[in-house]
Length: 319
Image 1 (cartoon, helix red, strand yellow):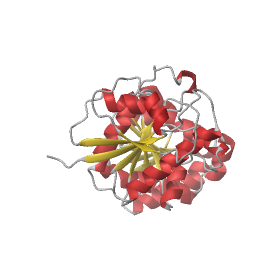
Image 2 (cartoon, rainbow, N blue to C red; image 1 turned 90 degrees about the vertical axis):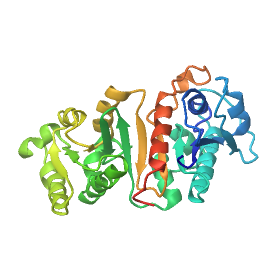
Image 3 (cartoon, helix red, strand yellow; image 1 turned 180 degrees about the horizontal axis):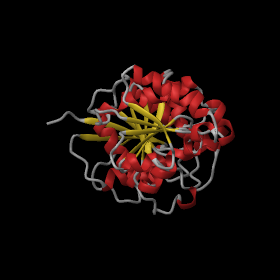
Image 4 (cartoon, rainbow, N blue to C red; image 1 turned 90 degrees about the horizontal axis):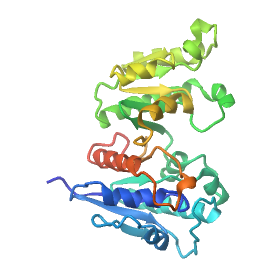
């Protein structure tokens, strides 16, 4: 029998759907007997949200309120909720680094909420990198047959060309290639998008492909990586969905996530590459509009937990 895997789940923003989908995922999916769950968040609020009549796999609750009195206000962005989310993440990272849990699955946070609480980071990915002193990291999204890495993440479209440096792009492609054997794709075939329509049309619709993207690809090929491109962004995802590539590196957020969410809106998973432990999350936000109504779909959380269990039993290339 395989060893017991302990999965830490952070509750995310308590005023969103995070606690609900975490509890439903623990209760509704058929988990093997050698998987244990620990749920990090304000204990009293988590218990109040257990509408789903848990019969099995009740998670151990790690109280992250740290003595603070926190109000549950479904659908409201607040500094208190942001602070509770930050505390839960800190505790889960601490326990993962100590070897007390084998992976972290993070429920959605509000970026505005954590900023109100005084944490100046763009999101989960960057906060986890800061807590673990990780310098090289990437965000990979899974959905159906697609695996997508983003060369730039949560920045304005107008800033993408100046942030798309050769060094940054090289790092993201390398991390994608390093991750693929861990993820079960040993051929590690990486397709790289162009930035401009039709991958620049030989320079007629932009020169980033000629001056930045293609030279990086050539250099990585010389190092032995199975990387190709730059490919037009309007065709490469179709080829990847047919199995011609194991991952696609997109140049900006919506270029990569629009096709993925079209295929797997309810079941997408986010995996952080480069960390010394497994971290996954559902590929959706706090859904404030349905918070507190017991109607949130836990499908993406269930997939995130399944992925965390799978990866926790494999050799992490960055540990």
